Every structure is written in C-alpha cells, then in structure tokens.
Image 1: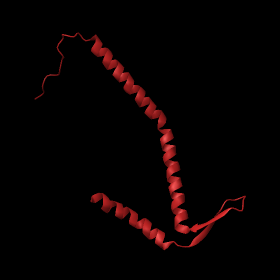
Image 2: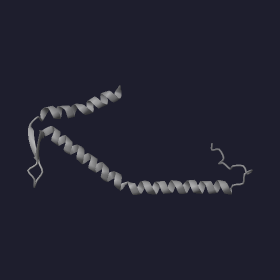
Image 3: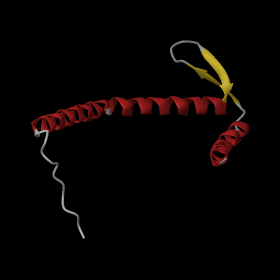
Image 4: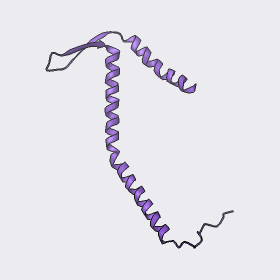
Length: 101
C-alpha cells in the first residue's frame, strides 16, 4: 500500500506537467528536412529519459573495472582460505579468541 502511495505521489507531477504543456512543436533533424510534430511535454520527457539512460550507461561502463577488480579479489580470498584449510591439520582444534567481558 505504501508503494502505491509513493508511486502516485511521484507520478502526479509528471501527469500535471503533461496536462499543462499541450502545445505542438516540430522537431527536426538538421541537414535533412525530416521533422516530427509532437506535444511539447512528450518531447521534453523523452529527451530527459534519453539523457538519463545515457548517464546510466556512462556510470555502468565506468564501474566495470571496479567490479572486475572486486571479483578478482574475492577469488583470491577464496583461494587463500582454501590453502589455509589445506595446511591446517585435520585433528587440530580450531583456535578462537577468548571471550571478552
């Protein structure tokens, strides 16, 4: 129920924006005569969505090296833990820290 209320509150400004900007504008591509007539609000929202997706793509690509480095570090930790377990005698008791007060 809370999700629906939050979604409604987030979508309300978008709907009001769409209803208040109903003028038709012509969007053209410069050296050609190709043009498209759309409502102003739709043109702005589509431009914002494209900009958001391009920004998300840039962030995702820039984080690829960090994720790769983290994956390698996790593999190395698993390998080192397996080596420690292999070096530990099978009948030796595991050591633990003494309880603190």
